[in-house]
Image 1 (cartoon, one colour):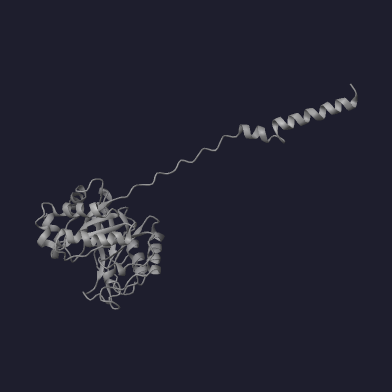
Image 2 (image 1 turned 90 degrees about the horizontal axis):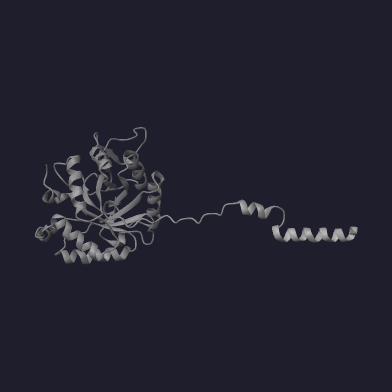
Length: 311
């Protein structure tokens, strides 16, 4: 066989090998490489319903023991299948009913080296032992403030320094009725930028924290900002359960699909709810049936002993 023929055969063979196996060793490498597995989506948790009680220094007397809070909250949550027990704890209130200047923290200063303008501190902590009991019993707690003229981001920092170590804490709450009452009788409306800043401050402590804003007037809420917010209505003075559901329904639709919550059981409504066979359940069921974005149901401490007698 001539050199030219052998050369031609060699070229043809090389070309054939190239076509079969590809350039270089890439086909061999690809054959040895394991296929990339298809990512499995992480299931999105369903909506969580929380049910429990409000707690404040001025709303219930004598102030209950941790065991009473745990038992009463568990009783409230048991009325609503698969709900988590919760407390809305007013850990900072206005100093004086006008609420124009100072705010009153029901715990000692967690950092005496830091200046906290307009904040007055208690010598003893009113909530610490209760929150520890919640940690052990799977109950969640909102730490809420009535800010008066205190800077809200400062209060978020202060309160979460004090209580942020508790796994029971799920977020921070602001009662907007008591926000800058020196500027508006029912509290200054929260702007979008304020709400966003408050959420960011809370999440700087824990990325999972939420912030609730509470009022009964929708116009006091931020116009468009929604991320990380829960909207709680604490209106009272209704003529009937139907009237309550109608008004709370407007609140739910106004902020849908964002989560909303409701405080109820006030003395001003006692004339009709006391006739219900089980007031917390009847009211909660009525709200859940009409307001699908409901996430928080809280009986107020002012009448809690009417439902759950003191120890």
